[in-house]
Length: 143
Image 1 (cartoon, one colour):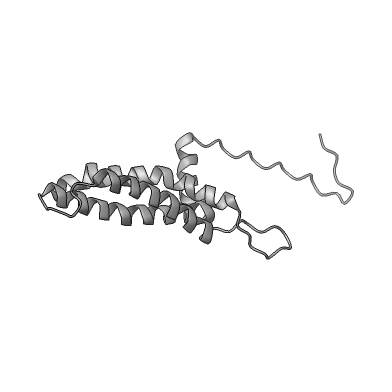
Image 2 (spheres, helix red, strand yellow):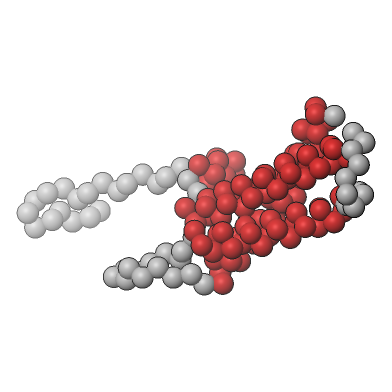
């Protein structure tokens, strides 16, 4: 038993332990409260992927409908260009809009190659996911 304090006040009661959260509850909380740099990296890469993906989808549908375009069927080349542009532009935009956090007492914002890496890691799955959604889910409704 704890001894009473010198002023005669009772000892403080211990705080209850927080309940253990389940896997999906933790992931839902992480999704709702994503750190700003991660959110900015994902949104910048997603924006680039959607804009370029819609352009690629329009080209793909035009070829499917029998349009004769200069150069013939260049879908594979445009697909490779789409992936390269999403990775490069997503990384560069992330580099520009996601500075590293500042420490205590410093106000100088810095950018390092890690900002580019964050953009690249966000852009890789988004480039694929946008193409899957556009060509497997949306394209059948448009053709």
